[in-house]
Image (tube, rainbow, N blue to C red):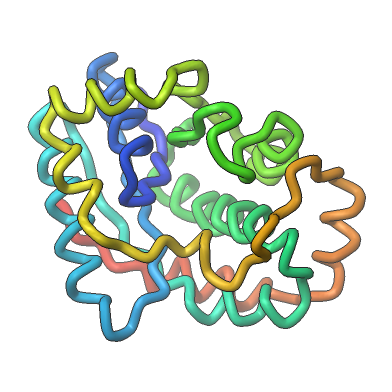
Length: 210
């Protein structure tokens, strides 16, 4: 059975994207990044419940990955307008370690074209270029109503709308970059050395399910 690493954000879109892959009989390694301290247990509970709901539709495994230390490094070196993009690129670098460990063949994301700044065509190109393996985007062309309807059908909607602070929205500009250029992003990334932190985040991942 083909296996993919699915980046599970805790919002509405990524559980639906994961479900659509499970429906195609693909095995998923769900990867969730968290930076919470006080809210950690509440966040963990939400993500575990989402994962358990997805497990009703196919074979899943859940990794919870600490991201707070890496975010602080990004904040030190990357401009506020580009942080959301770099956060997501760094997530792919960490997820790559999990992919190799699990012998998966690609990634799955809940990206939906044009809904938010991180999902413009320019920005998605820059973000996905961080991945060395194929990135599948099952809900890319869906509108929000279609995604919400599927979420309600599969039982993830009520969980997804529980209050939650997403890593990607932490300490970013009020108006993030929407037309990112890869050379500009890579030039900023050169300022930070996070090789050690990437390795540690992957090694410190908590395997929750099964």
